[in-house]
Image 1 (tube, rainbow, N blue to C red):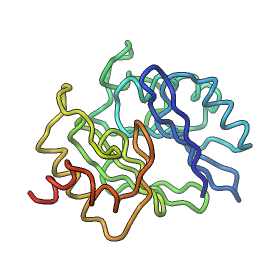
Image 2 (cartoon, rainbow, N blue to C red):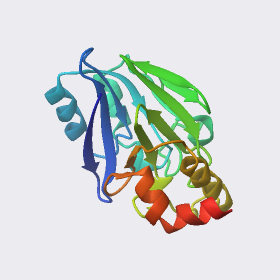
Image 3 (cartoon, rainbow, N blue to C red):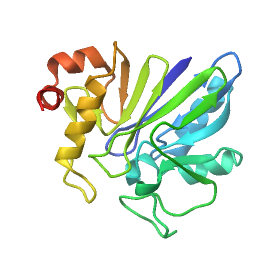
Length: 204
């Protein structure tokens, strides 16, 4: 399993390419702005895009979806229903309606070569926020950051819900590599020990 990260757009949203090296297939997670950079990274890896995966529906995580989908028309776009709009016009906090969208929810799994991707519904930053668990890695979107967490003051946000989501992540057995939606990677153990918000959630 390989993970390649790209920082995209004006606010540095992390896009991840999760790939199976043996089967040469990958998933593009949160393709924010700058589709050419995403497509160039996939091409450099020499992999086929099987999925486009969104941790939530905020604009800075989906801006490049149409271009990536055009380049790989057989790759469905996965998102939680709560973060998808029925309106095809541009949206700020929900993915606009488009072809090829599949709704996923808690406990759903996808096979990517030898990799199993598991969906954890983790509302709080948005109603449809999810964390993706793949092997020893967590792709946490804007739920958990290194030393922080996602904002809850947008429409659909909830401090109480993100606390419950952080507590659930903290209670996962063992350690994980954490790939957040912004800033640098971390580990779950490090966040349990040093992240004020996760510590608050663990005490609830």
